[in-house]
Image (cartoon, rainbow, N blue to C red; front, side, top):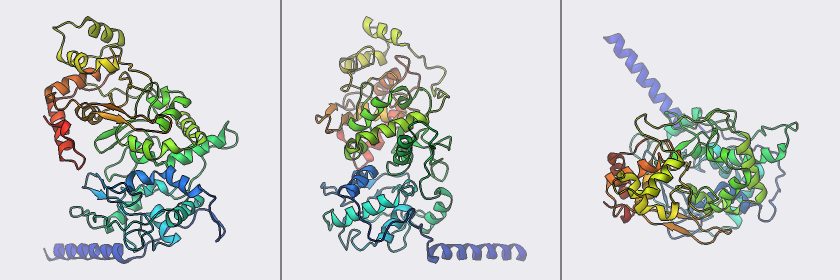
Length: 455
């Protein structure tokens, strides 16, 4: 017994020493990834464009619309994490940050006082940013952004996640090596364009933060196309961020011009943007240059897998072909099942009996990634609350789909969702009334909850 107690005491002592080292040992910060002259300055507009590529505005906008004033909650499995004030205000913003402080935030997730930042900020992806973009960003925020004195609510997660030294341990296993390595050599046709696309997707665009699955410690399962699970689909705020690589997925079925148009406008002939991607289009990709949009589309096309994704549908859920669905809806038999009857009453006027909708106006439901997602949160939330395509320079008008949560019960939403997930050749799992009830409750409990979802 005494020997066992000694072993336990030794282990406890080792644990205390490890914790103290995590708290007090200075961070090893990442060096600049490019040698630039000390007096190097960005060209006019370069820093602002780097900000647009990184989608900084989407998360850091103030509640009153003040650019970069912060304060908006970012939902996480551990609780809300509040976006920081990144204006050059010296007290509540980053006005006292040196260039080295700023680089440490972007590369290492460490603030100017040495505190580890929660990975709601995608520094795991920003580690690939070039030094030119880092310096451009620093110049933009310090010299071109108006300071705001907005004091952001301090993030306070439950124990033990409020102990930030644990994040340091997480980083040891979750972060990849810093710097961007162009994956395509000169022997590859359009290598320069593809490498630009790779940089945008892997680095500033931080596409993998949403579209790559995560492991048990919430680390990304890959940061480059060499990792087989990179961009093969993830989950954010309960919505499925679709697979971008496997055969049969939208980016692999669309041509590159359609993909670029989707990023620029939030819509194309096949789909409309939804979920968190609405903010990405609104604040970021609509302002990308045409060359960068096409480079991104080319890169996504290049890294596609040749293996078709497996269906997530249960064996007892029948899938109807497009012809069978059109015939069923066209007959409008009063004795038809509840799901297609609800579709005729609520959806057919815009999405039509063939499920193809109208190009650039009403998204098609056949083969739609939100409709057939393994997790049906996106589809169900759209039925309950509606959806809105963002206003963009190319399409300034907003298109709003009304929500039906106020008049459809959980059972009815489940029947409708199950029908569209298995019509026109779609093949996805059934949605239950319990699924809908859980999603409805989550919407009502969220800070952005809307009354339309009320039962």
